[in-house]
Length: 116
Length: 110
Image 1 (tube, rainbow over the protein chains, first blue to last red):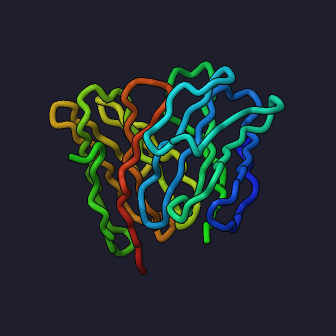
Image 2 (image 1 turned 90 degrees about the vertical axis):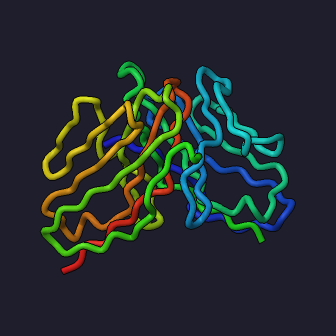
Image 3 (image 1 turned 30 degrees about the horizontal axis):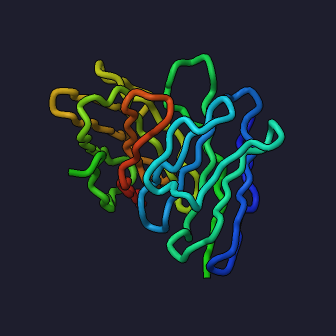
């Protein structure tokens, strides 16, 4: 079964450092998402990306965050200057085309970010 | 009012029991509804979509009441492997954004 892969699985960083989280979407999927989940809290939408541009973003996704698809395969989330409150599990998800919006997002296993 | 509200539980039930989870949503324009399952420290996985007519998948039955903005999930004959957090998820009609509830934790015991 095709899957979404994310790297790194866990990253520890110092406050103020830049972090890049990487995702390899399922190959024929066209919609890409980043969600995050702070420990013990709900899964929160960050941003969606379609046709090489952001289609929607949440209030969480401020100027410290950016996404890009630099090489047509990887989909990255960059946090420019990390804060303690950025510590969370970050999930990449993709949506299959041609089904209408069924809601079956395929999630990667997540990247756990710990900011010290 | 929270966009998607669930009882966090935990629900502790013995194997073989029937358990029901409820969820309410605040946006009447919501168009698609889902139950996802999340195991501890794992990614969410789609359990089932929820349709107005109600739908069943094996031991799982989902119901939607648009008038009351209410969604339910019924699990019959609970198994130990059903222990997880069940996430109520709502889409307001774009392909861009799912809104998750906080989840209801289920623990099935021997």
